Image (cartoon, rainbow, N blue to C red; front, side, top):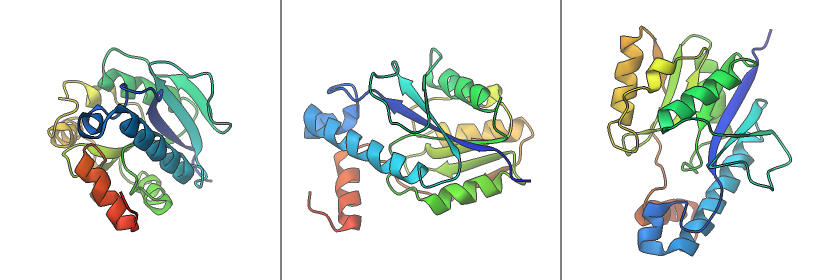
Length: 199
């Protein structure tokens, strides 16, 4: 019998000056907003091609206009760790395998998502390492709030601290291939070059 699967997507309400602030520091707020919208569209196009349920968790609140697919929720918690943990808790009440992703990694494919879910058949945790020291994907079979405590979020320590926490909790984890996030102007330029686009 197939396991019930869901993908949590963490999103920000697209407002100028509130998204992709590191991009905005060199490219301007309007360009950063445009890139954020493009990244969001690319991410949602990928997850819609999977067979998983789609759960859209927004910050700071659910916008008036949301996609017609999936379910929309507000992120709950005082820090990123609490927000991730609470989203997993909510999703795992009705699904057996849950992945969480953001909108920063345009290199993510349907095949990689499928492999992440399949890894959860034997692993407790699946992690997609990002080249900046974070992760672009994390998957669980059961709630694990302790995994998201005492993590130095938005630093290059996130991945190593998360894997250490997983080991400390006695979980076995599966690592996917490393991919790059889009955080800085050079990341975006590199992505456009891989697609053969002009800047």
